[in-house]
Every structure is written in C-alpha cells, then in structure tokens.
Length: 223
Image 1 (cartoon, rainbow, N blue to C red):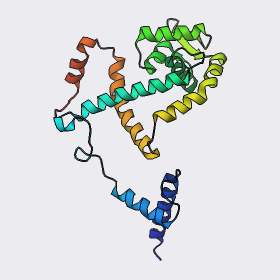
Image 2: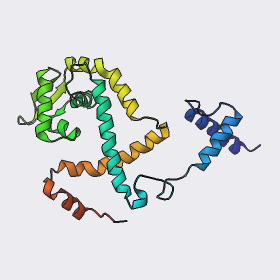
Image 3: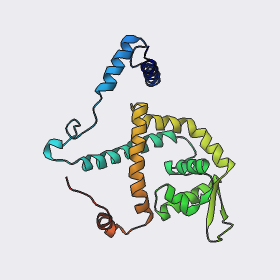
Image 4: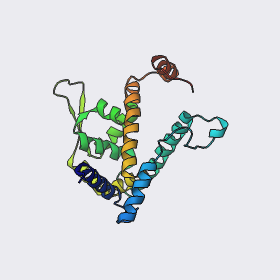
C-alpha cells in the first residue's frame, strides 16, 4: 500500500471538508470529485482571461483598480453609516478611532490620526468630539510633555459594545460573496498596497508635488 498517497488523499479530504462549509458541493464521493476537478481547473488571473469595462477600448488595469477601490470605499461607508444609525455616534470615524484604541491600546494623538490615514486638522476634530463624549481621555506623555496620549475609557468601550453587532455585520456584508481563500488573497494584496502607500502618506508631501515626487522615486513602467 502506498502510504504517502493515502496521506495525501486524507489531507485533500480535510481541505475539501474545510472549504466546503457552505455545502457548495455534496458531502459524498461525487461532490469530492467535482471539487477536485474545479480545484485543478482554477485559472491564474491574467490579462487574457479577466474582463473589465472599457478593456476593448484600451482602459488600463490600473484605471480599473483605482475605480474599484473608490467604489468599495463608498460601499463600505454606506454600510458603516447604517451600522451607527440611531446610535450615539455621529460619524463612522468615531467608532473606527475607538476600535483602534481598543485593539492596539493607548497611543499618541499623532499616531492615532496617522493610523486612520487622516489629515491632522480632521483627526483633531474627531478626537475632540470623542473627548467631549468622554469616550476617550487625553493625558500628557510621561516622556514628552508636548505629546498627548489618547486612551479609550470605559464609557467608550460601552458605547462601542452597543454597536459591535451591527459593525461586525457591516464588515461581513462588505466582504460580500468572497470565499475564505479569496479573503486571504485580498488581504495579502491590500497589505502590499498599504505597505507601499503608508510611508508616502506619512511624509505629508504637498499635493502639488505628490505625483511627481512618487513617480521620480519609484519605477512605474507603462504597459
């Protein structure tokens, strides 16, 4: 008996069981064979087998990606707005700031604003509202009195907890019909983009010089 082959088959069955949580395939030998066939026939996305609006007219993949990211941001904002409807929150940024403080602990005002990818004036207004609602507290840094440290309060945790069910449901809706594997693939790609853009954003380059500066410092090949 080929024990290595048997081991591989068992591992494949475990993968089938794990990926078939929503019973896309029947839980029998026929379902397993169909899953194996589809699994083997998956195509790696290329320019030839991926279609997008305007492709036949020369629209670039970069244009499509930029547009779809803008669309996704708008969709996510719509669901976030629904998640805080009839709550004490005025904007989605308020609960996002609280979630970051709950997840990562206290941090400086500057760090909190940068983590949420916002300009300083806008971030300061949000933090001011959070302080007014007693959802966060502000103290002087022990190492630098010029630095303000922001921490979530129990009142902030309570306000957040009241909306967490809606917030979690909103995030699930945003992910739509993606499979678990597709979610992990998307996380990997978005993390790669975030790691590229975040240091650039942190430099606060003037808008008039931003594109020229980034193009000068990085190699972008025209396809």
